[in-house]
Length: 434
Length: 143
Ligand SMILES: [Zn+2]
Image (cartoon, rainbow over all chains, first blue to last red; front, side, top):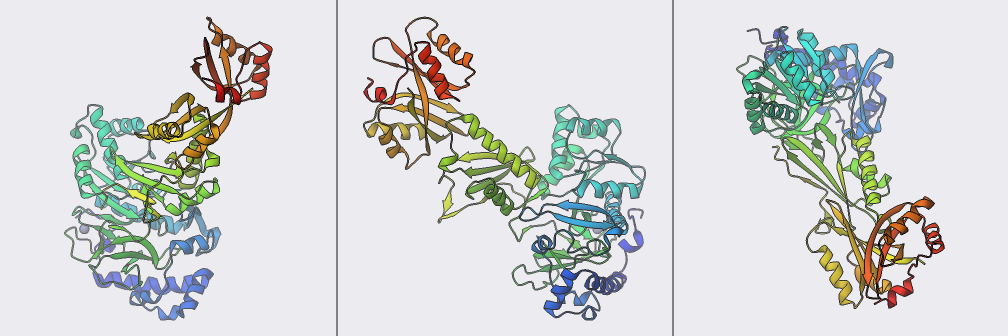
């Protein structure tokens, strides 16, 4: 078998993994308690001392961290080490506009990239491969993560970033890309674009794709596999824990192996916080076992999923998680970007609009559509079309700078947004994602 | 003299124009002139009516209305009348936002409604060039 990046750890016995986890968690909790006052306060409030954590079986005693904590502690409150030791930040949008900023030491970057390398190798990648990274680069973790992983494997890396479809297709065909990394909706779009240009699925050299950062269905997988002539692998991750590569799919395509030597996963009841047994649906919680820059303990992802320890034919022993089956909060993922209704509300209020709005998300031709209907007040109404359109454009700009993606704004008359039982329906998500 | 124009925001779906027009006519108000500007999502109905207050009263429950001053300039019944009006306004540097026209049964009278960015300047230049404009009281009486 050559399909592992780090065979020894990826196929380690349960006992070996537990041994590694236990050693790391004791050290990590002590380090966080001593270096992260914000979390020390939470532990003190709960009456938990570092000595209470002797193994991963004690993790349930620790307090949770949520996105609200990240906002509260922004920007440095959860920093786990001297800023001088940090070499990178990545960022994602938060609940009410404050972004999540995660810090990485060089060791953190290496660990993250190794996780991505495991995913690439699991998808059949070797140093002979040409990896086209069409995730966004920059603050978003998708591009940098897979880019780093591809380097670690020794693949020829095409750092395409997202968009510019003509150039993507040109490089894909001319440089014989063999592995494509991007969001599943963009993969589907590239498949269609190839067909439109008269290419058949067998005309490209791609053999695999590693797709994540947004929800996708099994049907979508089948259609991408067919249109590009590849095997499509899922990958999962979040900026708060590192980025993509927290878990990844193997050739069995029946769930994503979580890199348990770095991340301890629990599934909890989102209402009570109680830890649920394996095989039960609940909210995924991650404890970072060895992150230095941004060492989150018991971070609530709000992603709903199921863990399974059933043996996998690929030989990997790490626990598998299902694709996220939903969210325990109101976050939407639109074109790969996290969007909270509270962010939209904040922009509307700031721009002088009433918070009467409706978000409509749909998927057309495998691309998310994002429309916001906003009620204007009588004073904001003008007899000139250009004025109304200028308002829509300004609001689109304000949304774009808050969210990172621009919705189509539709100003509508007061009292026209549908209210059910007096309460406005804020979000209509017509996509069939789960 | 400027006249009062009412503008109503209409959603782009069947029946909105009919509803607005029928409530005005049910109230016994005459629509002297009307224009609709529309986009994919919405339309703006602009109205010159015989009774502004009554129109506001019957419409404001259902649609958003705004009131603006516009110029209604008489176009004499001869070739180039509109061209002359536009020319004298253009020469002052006043910007015309939109125009529409209507006729009245007063012999040979057609009017162009002008929405401009500087109404006083536009009126002054029209007066200097001997172009007649209407006032609100004309609208009440105009047949
Ligand atoms: Zn497997």
